[in-house]
Length: 504
Image (cartoon, rainbow, N blue to C red):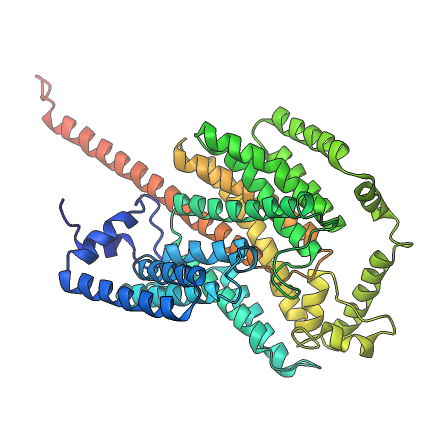
């Protein structure tokens, strides 16, 4: 077997370059590594020492997971895209909260560290920052800066090392994803990772409801964990529904079609087990977009009808009463409390328009701006604007608008491209991004989820797809121009070779 030239592999993986035509050949990288025997020997010895250390100092299950994490980290050093996949898999699957024996394992920190090192190495080899020069990224930096400034200059601002570490990691992985996800196929693979991770949580929710007897299902982990609150957990589950539907429609494997079709009602019922009214509204809005944007409108209408039958058949009296109380907000203490929190948040923005009251200081500042009972804002827009200022709120809103614009623009550009598998994948991704963004915005209006990682990943994925589609149009235009030039040259050659008239 011939060993691929390392320089060729580096050329395929130029940092930040969009190369939609080049396939993902991760399987060739081990050939490059192990063709250098000294390097391979040192690598094996290093892994042996690490495994011995873990076996001595950690319980067996945790030692195995950490060892696999180290092995995966070595792979990530050669292919940072694997690090992006692993990071978002861990961020949404939450194995440290759902699998016994992994409590306390900082898996995302381990993976993100390897990914950052890998990206730095690749950038040093072939530096290219053209992927950053987009309007979305300017407003991401503005938002990032405002969050940091709110901890320093907010009315109640205090150092928030834990939360700033979270935001720093979120945005760094965001920029790495922009650089290394450079084709429709990689976006599609990333979509599968997100979908199956969240779909597992839907399965987990049903286990808690049917087997463990939970009346209301909240997210995995302990209070304070990511999406532990039942409303936050419902929103996470809503995000997977468009993936399940459109990927089921796109995949060519009938086995996967059946699996994804079977997961749809499981995840939908998982949303119902949370008793979240915001989750119900987000799921309804997301399914409506799915039905309207599917190519087969009759099938879309059938999906809505099936959803209504599903709700009527499986929703118990308690859940129906819970959903029926949406329009009775004046008599509902939870709903009226949200209105009181929104009013207080508006007052905070009025008195602290530039830096807000400080990151994660909404409840601390609440008594100083209202006589109501202190509570969270339960609204992503109010929470962000009151804590980090109006500039941060404007940047967040512009990111939403630019993401919608990117998806719409890709949809228009795809109509100019010929039919192909890549075009089909891109079409699927635009529909998924539309429906999940609608679900996020509807749920986020009733939840403080301005720091939800999926939203910023969605901003990045829409931007990446726009870049790739632009590149495809440029390539198509270049081929057309080249064909015109070749046709003109051929015509000139024919005229030169044509015999002169006899009377000339």
